Length: 285
Image (cartoon, rainbow, N blue to C red; front, side, top):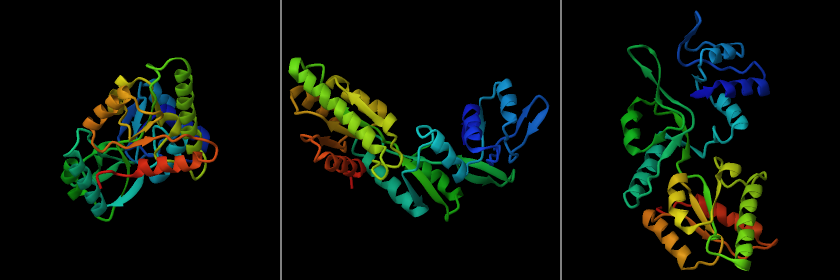
């Protein structure tokens, strides 16, 4: 698992020097040899940086990943779920079948490295890198080398939520109303998602994953670019908005859509629960 020297420094500062971090690859600098499985300690970091080594491959452990996730939640996201090998087979088959009917390509991302053994060298090798995309074809190529009792932490390829409100074609009072709706929705999702027990999904980072689209012609482009998981429509649909949504629908027949009701103090929590339900539902099932 690749970690930058800056991230390592932050870990040691926040959690003390007793964290067990081991090199995965041999590193030789200025006559010093840091071999695979040697402990990486804070004193090594200035030497690595002096020699222009700003990223180090280290052994993945759940404890190390948990610490990284706390300090860098957007870079080391929490897993969405845990699967055994047969369950991974089924989920990837479902995604393969869904991909056959849409232009959106859905896949999984591993949390942490998946290791195997090189029988000739007698050492561990990385079969699948942390955060590397995984589809059915790649899985079939490597699963014979994996211990069948192993469990896998994974994330989905789709994460962000798009707030879609047309501000470009609005004027006067309509612009003010739509701007207010757009701002209120962003605030609602970000603040609610950070409250204990109300997260939308384990790997959803509200400060990073709420995206505003205020020009209909840009909706499909942003849906593709961000790999958004869901679109929340913040207004009544006019013809311009309908055309933009139709473009997305033609690209992805399984797009998750939710129209915002008239929100007030009494129904915001109900609306947030509805967001969770739509976000987590796979429409191809």
